[in-house]
Length: 194
Length: 227
Ligand SMILES: [Zn+2]
Image (cartoon, rainbow over all chains, first blue to last red; front, side):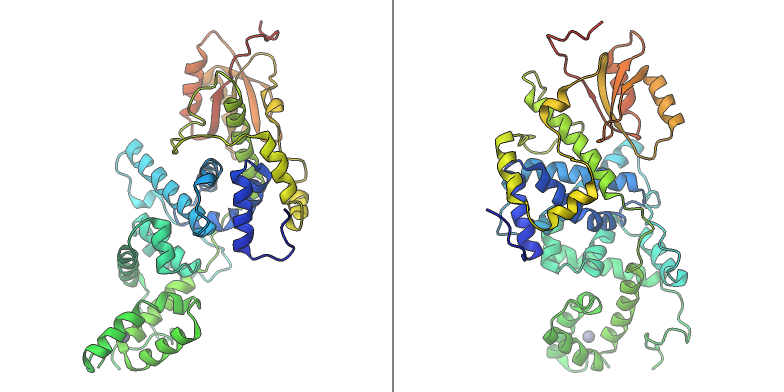
């Protein structure tokens, strides 16, 4: 068996995971490099420290390695892997909380962003995101940036679609409070007085 | 003015409202897009929501200031896999595969036969690029992983950001010294600096957040290296 030259990312992931289940470390490495950036960015909504991010990614791939046999190929490899990363992050968050007593979310600030990016655009968002529970922040990233559907997010986060909707709603309402007061500079927001 | 048209409008409002996140990131299909456009033209609430969500989306698109280090990170994963494979290959290996891992089963798929077959499977395409990026052969055999330098009692992997000073301090505290390493996978072999018990050195190490991984080396019964 060889992989055809042109296969979709989904097929490639599936083939790699079959090889991983058979104990192929090179397939695991290929899968790892294919997911690293996506997971690192996703997890940067959880912690800004690369070494913590790396630890969660590596824990995730230890689970992938150990449990590849349990994967059902009717579902998507990507939601499976991102789901493991999501749960690993939450576990690590709870473990930290137990070790250090109640930590505020301020201990898990979102990272500063690329300095070339317009500071005004993201400052309000950064402050807003810092006020959100970890689950809500990660859900926003899954939806807005990663483009996962409600159903996929429900699979990844192992909760009902209604819970995903509620998290997105509450996150949005909170963020709305941090939106800078509108001046004439933002033409895309309709005036309340109209 | 938004809810004047009764329950039809209200139902459409609810459904369109839940599409907005995927409208702003452009992952809705053509029909859904049209549906949102039509509704938003007559619903001020959704119009405002759309504007807010556009700004959330825009803000979330910023790249985090993060140094991605996939190859270095992968090497540390390989070190963990090496150790857990070595442990599962050793007859006296303890049941827990890796520190802090409590995943279901904990079984390691360490079949060398399966490996040989599977390596052939992915020979084509991107694989060549992957090897170029990783540069050196990253796959390590179980036998290689069990070769030990003299005096080694602990194998450890440290955070990539640890300074030499911090490392020295940490080793002093745990009464350990480096006898070899790091390997290409970042593994250090550590020997005891005193008569302190290995497990207390190990505990000392594991207390540090800069220690990614620390394992007591499984004793080799027939070893001629011991003092
Ligand atoms: Zn509406």
